[in-house]
Image 1 (tube, rainbow, N blue to C red):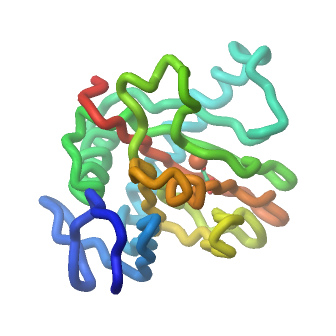
Image 2: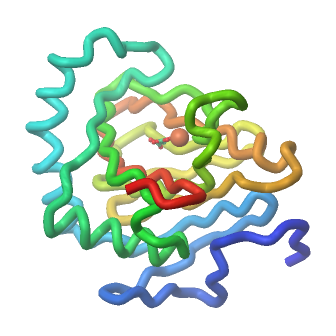
Image 3: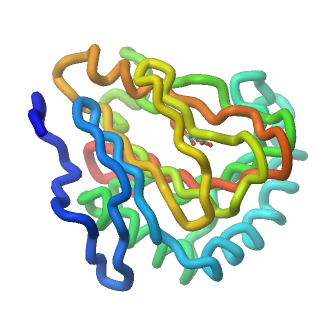
Length: 209
Ligand SMILES: O=C(O)CCC(=O)C(=O)O
Ligand SMILES: [Fe+2]
């Protein structure tokens, strides 16, 4: 493949061997790098992450009514550090080829029918508080199978990825050519039937935690 800019995701071949799991590379695109990954988390890990999230999401809904926006109609929460979250975060950091301390932690999203995350960039706007330690990459994991809808879509790339339990999508946006970063515009399509659970890790250029 002809690549214009270098990527931090430097894995070659069909799989990524992390300390505790073999991840498969299903599809890959360059400029921007977008990688579809299989076998990132086990069924048991997906179920445990959902279980841990259920309580927190309910609680965060009560406390954060002022944050309601039509950009993201799903419910979300950061999970606290414990055995499973730190194991999954370490694995995600190895996939993303960054130190785990650069990650913001695991952010869980739950979409019910009709809920969506409209197209957005994960990087911060210039002059935003976060620009001294910008976000550089994202890994979204799918924690369940969605009956219908809930795709992660990249409208500037005419690309959409259907959620499958245990799979994930990686992308990065620190390119010197801003038009490449702008191609990482993405969103979560409305869930039509069933519900969707996803876990996102956003990664910073420098240590965050
Ligand atoms: O739910 C999705 O497919 C996308 C989630 C997302 O864009 C994010 O968490 O930043
Ligand atoms: Fe996003």
